[in-house]
Image (cartoon, rainbow, N blue to C red; front, top):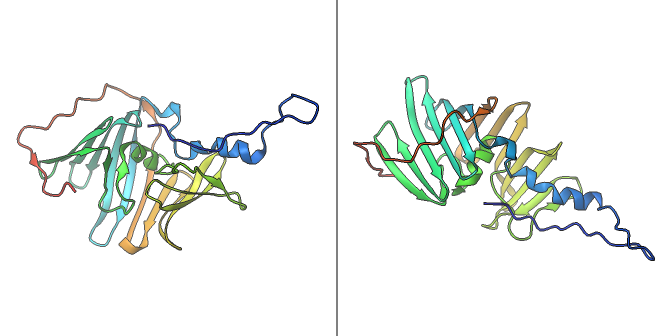
Length: 237
């Protein structure tokens, strides 16, 4: 799904001349803001390893995520635990549908359009923004009003659910973003070098991860199939 950004560049002519003026810096910036949440074309048809550390109220640990990305709406994400010596889940997203396999419990869930990650209080995530989150972009889209360039050079907007987001940009990439609950930060993310940090204080959750270098996609994505012996999950949301 392509993001919609309202904020056309107005090119008027000076009096007595039909030569267009160059767009203002603010208009040019608004036109380029979609890069804050849209995966660049160079990320398609790639695969990479993401090392993720999580610290929560009930447990903590490290997972190694393999992201095989054909497009924002067609990818496979598999999580491996070196402590357990095996993969623990697999998410297969194919356009508007997804199959989630709990490889520890031999259970499966099916989802349409979006998936909610219980530990991360971002609400239901449309399938195409999950890779964006892992690769350091803003995991949402502005609503029809688009993103607004603030006086301090940051961005603010509301998503389709009416929630307020603010983004700090540097060099065309997000350096931090915050999801607000009224006037209180609810979830925030920041980048330090090649590390990403996400914090949700009310849930006592902290995530940090590093995405490895991209490689060409080695094989075509497999057709989602429920393995023999798997049963419908009891906690599919």
